[in-house]
Length: 366
Image 1 (cartoon, helix red, strand yellow):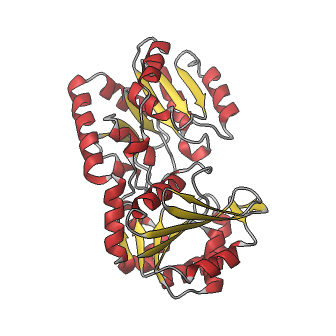
Image 2 (cartoon, rainbow, N blue to C red):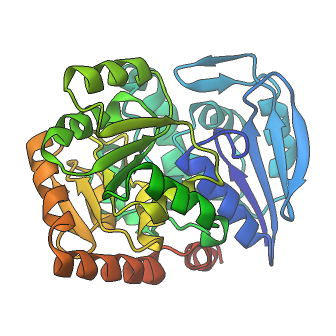
Image 3 (cartoon, rainbow, N blue to C red):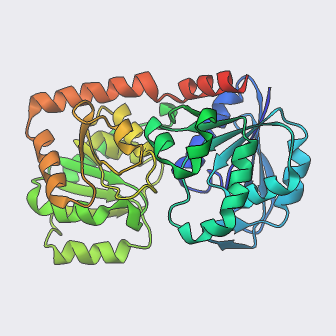
């Protein structure tokens, strides 16, 4: 089978949950099938390269508007490539390639992977929605990452008969732990309990609520990642008087991240809007048997991934008091901690291996 993934950007070098997922999925599918990825480049250079047995074609971009790269050569690359593939696996949201699909109107089978609605750029939707609806009408199947998101998306309301749920997955082989780094982290923080969170420092991640919760938590709180809110969050740490507890780690290299998962005692995802549709970091934490505290964002799949009372606890978004209570409850109850840890690992093994995701998708493609 010949499978063409169409995605907005790609990892590497772009860092993001969808980009990483498509990378690992392509690697898994390429073990038995011909796989290619078409995307925009994050600079002006077009390129073709081969990664782990599959081809990646990038169209050079000239500018980024509404978080979308404008790549003039993408039309020609897409039109030429599509002819050679059996399945188009289209990863949404992806405004540029949605418009190009409407222009080219290919006849190949189309599977849309609905990672998220367009939430932040809602003002763009009056223009974009007719093109998005055309794409949805042409789709043979629409893959949603959780049943919660599938049912809550207003854009998918008319297309529920095409929708199926297949959870995302990861390849834990990339989560190689540097044991010396783990020892170093624990020693650096005085062997006190560690609460770890990871993500871009952007508004929907809700890190300000975790920082405010720190006043009532007897543990070190480490936040990995970088973004436009870095300076604002640094000021909040000072104003809240939690500089001795909370540290912004900055952008972590891929080979550092596993050590922080293993060194921490609990993982927290304090996101506040449906921009957080799934929370891949939760799966990574589960692989390391870490209990999770996350939020019950209406219409998001975050609370489906982390099952309340099973793999951790969920609390209302934007509630630093409840966030602190949930973290303290897990950290201070050894039996509860052990149960959540074991359940987290079990849930990962049952649901979130990339090979299981790939198998389900292949069955759908066939």
